[in-house]
Image (tube, rainbow, N blue to C red; front, side, top):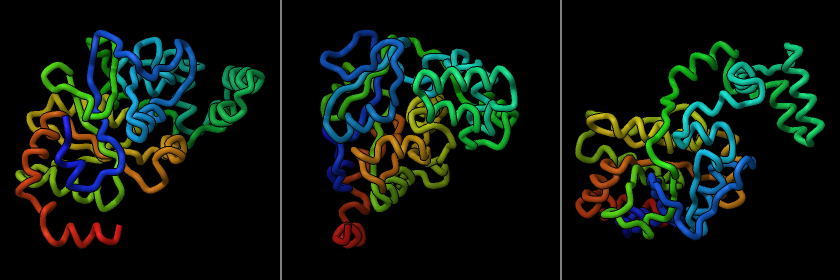
Length: 273
């Protein structure tokens, strides 16, 4: 499927479609079972190189990625379990004997950076108790599919692929255009939201939750600075993401021809891009 939106906003990367599947596409980028990897790095490769990526319950790369893709509460298997993760996201685990022992093991395995984050905390949330409340809010689920597949939208067949969303990696001008387009027909619904979560979680489970709403909203992402560090080599430093759940994407596509994207103000703005 070729996107009118991508053409109209001058997108330099591929719109990335996320779909559920029960068969593994070939060829596809995939992590080896049990090996660490960042889901957003695969999204960046799909967007920039036009490759296909796939994830399963054995190949989701990291705990947050497994949660984000919809493979259940993978934080249960985080070092130190849920308690360990709550400390990791907040002010660290060095205050407990078990935490210090786990951190020392990580350092011995060569994971000095991970050990430091585990002991001192990423400090993305104020306390472990705040992290606990955050986990109650995160829309975790175990999806009824074997694989989450991501591929360039141009390689999809909407009649055959179970597409859940389309993600655009965009600069500030293009993001502005997508926000306008998402609100073009029904602005009173505030059709764009900015949830706080990992980059892959905004695209995955938070996008899945939108599909359960009567009017799914588009989601702005890449406010995750860990993910931004991961993808900057392939996507650059000035891109954000906007994920449109499939029904919202189709509506946005249908409105391109009559919209501001063919008017003077937009053309003037892009002349300076």
